[in-house]
Image (cartoon, rainbow, N blue to C red; front, side, top):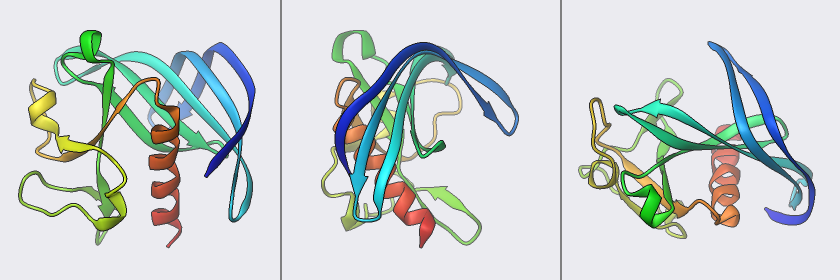
Length: 154
C-alpha cells in the first residue's frame, strides 16, 4: 500500500467497537493506493490502560475497518516505540504468535520484531512476538495493517 496524500488531520475521533466507544485524541487520514485500488487510511492516537499502565495507543484503519493496534513500550517516553502483537490466522479467527516458541512467518520479514515481554512489563502481558515501530513511522504502521487486511481476506 502506498500513501498518495494526506486527506485530513483532527482531534477527538470516536470509534464504535463491539464492546463500547473509544475516543482518539488525534488522528491523521491518508489516501492510499494498492493493487486493488484506492483506500482511505486513518491512524488514531489516544491513551489507554494496558498491562497495568496508562499507555499510548495507535490504531490503523483501512476503509473504516481496524486492522492493526499498537501500544507503547515501557520506555516509550524515551524511545518513541510502539508494539503490535503478531497475530496469525488460526482455527477460529486470529491468534497471537507465541514468543519464543513459534517462528515468525516470512511475510513479516520486512518488519522489526521483538518478544513483547522484553519491552512491556505488567500483569497479563502476553508471551507474543510483536512488530516494533517508532510512533512517527506511519509507513510501517500502514504496512502492518495492509498485511493483516490481506491475511483476513484469504
